[in-house]
Length: 273
Length: 322
Image (cartoon, rainbow over all chains, first blue to last red):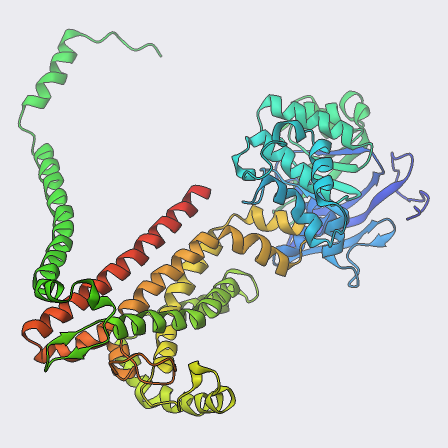
C-alpha cells in the first residue's frame, strides 16, 4: 500500500500521495481515438474535478480508471494507468477486483429494482462480506446522509425514492464496498438544485475517507467541491475526427482564477466556442 | 409576439365550421364507428364461443355435475363420462414440458441478450429460434412419431432400468407416452419463452448492468442477482404464455400421447389430454358423448383462461416496476 514518491517527468501540481497515475494515456474505440496523451495524477483523499465541453473524453477517461470501458466492444487503452503502483491494464489484473477498490456513481441514479436494504447489501454480498450486514447498511446510509430519511422503510424498493435520494442511495451503495477511490460521472446532472447541494456537501465529507474523481459540466460545482481541476478540450485531429485531450490541470483556485492556458480561460469565463 | 385580439368574425368562423358539411369529418366519424364495431365483434365472438360451449355441454353438465371433474370413466356404451385422466394428462404433460423448456429457454434468452457472441452470429440464432415457432404442430407430431420417439426411447429405457423403482419411471417406455410427448411440447413452447424473455432482458436499462459491474460484481453475479431478478416478471410472463400454449396444444399431443383413458403414475405409459381426446373422438361422437366432449373443452378453456389471467397480472406488475 506504500506509494511511490513523486518522480514524474511531467509537471504535476500534486503535493502528497498519488493514488492513480495516468501516464501518456490514449483511449480508442475501434480506430477512433477518443482521448489523446493524457498525463494526470490523482492525489489521495482529495477531490479532483474533470471539466470540459461535451465529447472531450472526460467520462471516457473516468471509466478507464475502473475498467468499465472493458464492457464496450472495441475500447482500447494505450499508455499506462497505475493504481497504487499497479498497472491497471496488466493482463494479470482482475477487472472485478479493480471495480471493488474503485467504486462508481453514475450520471443518472441507477438503483437496482430491489429494496433499499438490498441495494446496499448487494455489493457486500458479491464481495463475500462476512460482517454484520445490518450495521454496514446503516453505516453506509449514514455515510451518504440518507439514513434518517429511509431508516423506517429499508424494505421498500429503491425505486420508490426521489431522484436525489436515489443518487445518495447509489453513493451509499458505492461506499458500502469500502473502495479507496470513488468515480462520479456527472452525479448531479439529473438532480434538482437542492439535491445537488446535498450531494456536494456529501462529497466534501466523503473526501476524508475516499479519493474522489468527479466529472461535471457545472463549473460552479467544480469550484465548490474540487481541490484540483482538470480541464479537457476537444480538437479535430488530422483525420477530421475529434479527440479529447487534457489542457490544464491545477489546483481548482488556479484553474478558475489564474489559468495558464487561453482555452481554459475562455472556458471558465464562459467565452467558450 | 403579441397576438391580436380575437375578433367576433373569427369566433363566428369557429362555430360555423362545425355546422358545415365536411367530408374529412364524415370519414373520421365513419372510421370511429367502424373501429368500435370491430372491437365489439371480438368480444362478441368470445361470448358466442363460451355460450355455445355451455349450451352444447349443458346435458353433460346437468348429468355429471362437478363429479365430471373427478371421474375417470369414459364409456360411450353406458354413457358414463369423466374428465380426470384428461385434466391430469393435460396439466402433467404441460408441467413436464415447462421443466424442460424453462431452464433451457431462459438460459438461451440470457445467452442471446448478453454479448457472449458478436451480433453477426446472434441475429441469425435469434431468427432460427423464431422459426421454431413457425413449424406447424402436425409436423412436430410426425417428427415425434418417426424420429424423436425412436431416438429418445433407448434413453428412456435406460432411465427405466436405472430408476424403475421410482413410480414415475416404473413402466417400460411405450412408443406413445406422456414423457416423450412432454419433451416435444417443450420444444414447441421454447420459442415463446426465449423470444419474450430475451426481449425483457434486452430492454433492461444498461445502467443496471453498469451499476452491478461498477460494484465489483462478476458477469455471473450481475446476471443472476441483478438482471434476472429485474426481468423476472417478464420471464414469468413468458412462461405463463408458454404454459397456455402447452395446455392447449392438440395435434402433437393427439399424435404422440397414446390416448389412454386412465391415469398411470408412470410417465412412460400412454396417457391423454383434453385436446387430444377431443381431436380423436369428436368425429364420431353424438348425444351425451358430444356433450361431454364440450364439457371437457369448457374445462380446458377455463384452465387456459386462468393461466392467461395470471400471466396478465404478472406482466402488468412488471410494467409497474419499470
